[in-house]
Length: 431
Image (cartoon, rainbow, N blue to C red; front, side, top):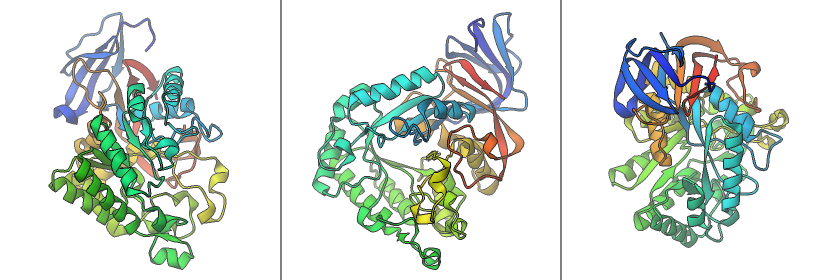
């Protein structure tokens, strides 16, 4: 939104705001970066100082909140940068991204947080929040300066998939985080069981001659963490679940009133180990794609609330990262552009409503990160995604704005396309 306009008015759109149980045709008025009014359709009258978006036949939701996206900067700017990926996120309707601490240098001191914040501010597109390292250098040996990281703006702490082999160190880390009211973000992995693996440990791995990663690598790590959550009282978020058994453990923990939440990557809800059967390295992801039974269990866990959020798990790579024998390729999918359409596809293939799905991408994610986002409340910051729920399109390299073009979804036909993105009240993208 250019400075000549005093306000932005979005008219006649289908407003879906799960946080406020709103599902109606409405107008939205935005002034000075905030939502100042939400009224019945065609009731807010623009003046000469208003910029107007006609959202007739379009869906208006809170800006999407992605609770796990690798932006590659600092450290791997040859793959992508904060600027390139925040611009791509804006075009995908994602207004806030959460960056894990496995950058180079690791996010284990305030200076790195400040660097990332400055780069994101200079890009002036989607917002970036950070997780701080749970242990110094992510080495699993000494606790990080957690409170300093929190003061610098980190929304939580994680060791990513780097092992903390000593359970006493993990317990102390959880206890220390709990004293500051900090949430720990866990990517459950028992390193000794998963080391060297690249696919699900099953019949397809055997047939292809690839080393498998058993489900127990996930479940043992979850079980150990849950025992320590129960002892320390720390709030814990389990990211990127991949198995039916993993989801079961989280469901049991929630029934026991433990302070836990969980997410799943969008691709885990649409792909299985069958998709790698021709050594398709685009499907090399960690945790690996598992069985059809696991996929269905994960979808059920999303539907029944066991899994609180869906993330993109965005990991952009250069083209040569996927051009090697399967096990030697780098894991991960460039996932910003397919985040919304893959989630919308769930409304056609499951019992989930569009409001259910949008909740997993907005207010639920924001609650996990502990940030003020994911809602269209009056007086809230105007971060808004506007999309055409019915527009058909096909994913190709030209439609991927991220620097990374590595995705198994090239050539897929999708329904649902972002038309406008508003961040801090500014119209930053229009298709």
